[in-house]
Length: 203
Length: 150
View 1 (cartoon, each protein chain N blue to C red):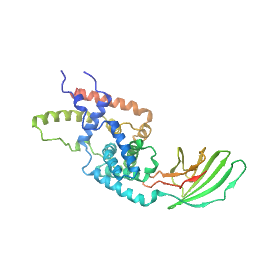
View 2: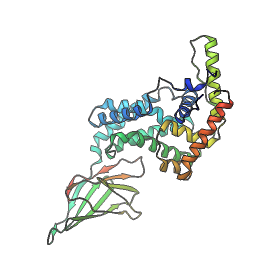
View 3: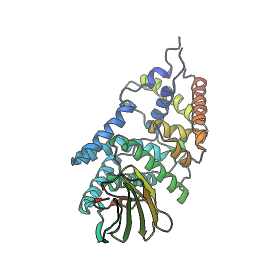
View 4: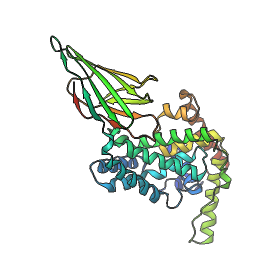
């Protein structure tokens, strides 16, 4: 029996379910609009991690990526009155961040490598070495499977995974892909990932 | 054994990146500080409200037709609008000086400013209205006119 396949481990209970995040973001934005400054703090806390991953998908160096995230927040503050529908604030933020990341990566050709294998691995500790070893083995299998994907698959899947429901029209132009090919490409990339996971012995 | 669903796979992607390229320490706090500071600055600017500096004589014609012009100023931007109402239908022609790529919105209606600084909005409902101007350069704040009536 294939008891230790990643499927069971994948669902991390720690993270709020996708839709919850967007709802919470909308409510925080509404509170801020109603004059409560903590609404802005909460919105920033909720959405900054999402923006980080979307922006880093453009392979911008850390400091440049931080600047892009900050530009996005400043734009939100300056443009808040133009966002009529609070529930749309999450999409507004991710689209703005993506657009800015794309612009910066084009303009500066910063998009030189942050190869994934240079990224620091942060593994939890504090449990038995044996438990860690098993856990690490699983993690490395997942990492290897994602690494095995072509560059454009990694970028597209990272954006889609964190942005949840990206607007295909703007996504297409920011990824330099025809809009009609986003859906099929995403499907192919997911299929490749599934195969890679199987080959890595994950399933 | 069931195949991993799309959501399972995207969850794998999320997990991998959360572990390998985590949000830098302190980034959230830095962004909160930057956003709060900007918000206090913006509040000081009264949200970029344009000032009405000129209003032409209202030319009232027969059967509810009217034409007049309004001129608004904000910073270096001048906005001239010509409002024409004819038998319940309205039309706004606008000129932005200096010309700048921006989107002009009036409720659900939107127009893009051309290279020459012109835009037009048609079929606007009669009543109170305010135009908001959103420069395409997101480093620039958006601003809006005071409410006026057409």
